[in-house]
Amino acid sequence: MSAFDLIVIGAGPGGYVAAIRAAQLGMKVACVEGRGSLGGTCLNVGCIPSKALLTSSAKYAELSHLSSHGIAVEGASVDFGALMARKDKIVTDLTKGIGFLFKKNGVDLIEGWASIPAPGQVQVGEETYTAKNTLIATGSEPSPLPGVEIDEVDVLSSTGALALDAAPEHLVVIGAGVIGLELGQVWSRLGSKVTVVEYLDRILPGIDGEIAKLSQRALTKRGLKFQLGRALKSVEKGGNGLTLTLDRVGKDKQEQIEANKVLVAIGRRPVTRGLGLETLGVSLNAHGFIEVDERFSTSVPGIYAIGDCVPGPMLAHKAEEDGVACVEMLAGEHGHVDYNTVPGVVYTDPEVASVGQTEEALKEAGTEYISGKFAFMANSRARSTGETDGAVKVLATPEGKILGAHICGAHGGDLIAELVLAMTEGATIEEVARTCHAHPAMGEAVKEACLDALGRAIHA
Image (spheres, rainbow, N blue to C red):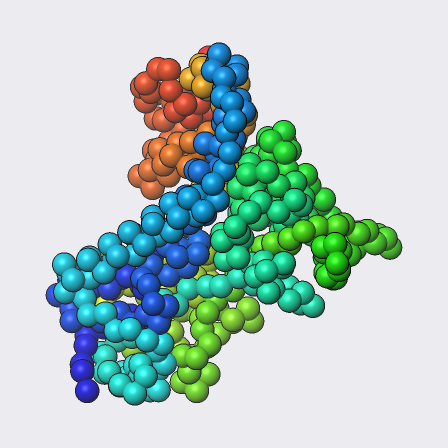
């Protein structure tokens, strides 16, 4: 029976990063993965393949706008086989890279599906391993919609939507969150009519409302159609495609939409089945997430959990921070994650990036705040590239402590980093406003938003 200091179950971003960091700290570590390839949902059927398709589809879509630059492109077409092959190669190369990192850092890889028959034991197939500590990092999967069967042929999850061999004539996306909008824009760019159906009366739940409106306006301009305040009741298959029946929320009225494919993107749920948690007595909350304390300890000593299977933002980079903090505390070091400074990004065009509190949350809490905003339309770099949609928005205390920052605009996922660092290090909006930014650059909009909050905007 092989013995380890730590066995990590799951080789997604949180799991493999935790395993490598634990090995760096001197632990004897194994990582168990049953998928057949490393990297979890993020690398295989999530973050990475979706960004590959977003990039490819963006390049194709850009061809139709080059005439304003005096550039004519005739006869452009999409080779879906080559497009998907590129995406698959990126995934394969990155998953192989994790295997290399395991070998480099001395992490043992155990292939197969794991269960925990007892504290201190992990079973994979017929083999049982012992571990001083066990870390659950099993991630998440698409949430199903009651009454709607996902067959990955006509009714798709994000997994199926990443592997279509042609652009459907009409794709209906159920859910106006991150996944639905990103994949909706991919297929819209590649030739599909895309309709996004959302239960709420807005897109991007949880994102600052003003920024979400800017995003919806820009996405509508780029071809996406939105049906808000509607709930999907059923999907019927017929000889000519699919018929969706929708309920108008709060109204006694039904509507029908015809479609060729449906993408169900209403969120994700933790993957914990098969681990034996109920028998062990590991506590789960009402939504199926593993309950943990500030050290990521579950209700059973020696068993820890991180990432998407515990409460909090379901983000790959959050899972990585969880993993590092957890194993550093196991090694007797200081580990901590400030979830208020974990950014989120939607990689649509334009991107949407956010960190900290939204304006709605501050109002609900009765927090006194000041705000500043700067539109990219007034940014010279944005004007020169033609990427003028959106704005930067900052929220701060009257004394200047940054409470939140939100961006809708090109490269928003990169621009938010400055404000994340400012929040992490306690820099005020005055200090960001007095930081010299390169010119012309998109980052000048961050400075200008801070100046606007201070009542000193120069270019607004």
